[in-house]
Length: 209
Image (cartoon, rainbow, N blue to C red):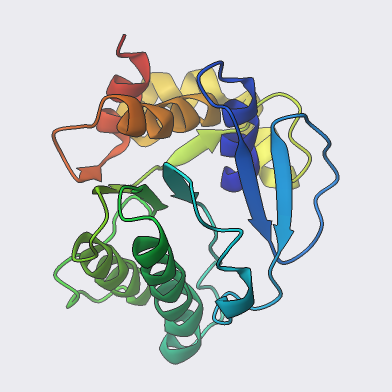
């Protein structure tokens, strides 16, 4: 859901010339700015390196719920896959800005009780050590989908209708996916003074001129 919302925001943005969508499965969208690269296994990127060169930014929105997973399995998807993909891009595009969608409550001490938060924190820490132009870790909370999104679970459709109430009660825990996408774009255009962006930072950066 996050990746689709960010993608749509990028395609609408006048300053973005080209978007490469890296997927494991086809996504039914045609747009003059958009190209699609099918990568069955993100841990096997060697034959795709030429296609991955020449980009200013990567907005890494891939992820999976930790519900029902053991730590080793969740770590392979969340940590191993992300870091392998990022290391490849850092080697191919050293002037790239890399933005990673983590999550509210991520634990960069790597020692907390919540398994998913530890693994996300380990991933954030490792990304910050890579030789990119800049790395930003986004920690969104509840996100209202963008109009036109296809990949939205029913619960998010219901919650989207309640967004004004959620935002009024918990303003530092809720964003629209438009705000998330705009904030990512502005990390490339303007940068940001923090490498970890909580919901408050995301919403603030999205509104900056």
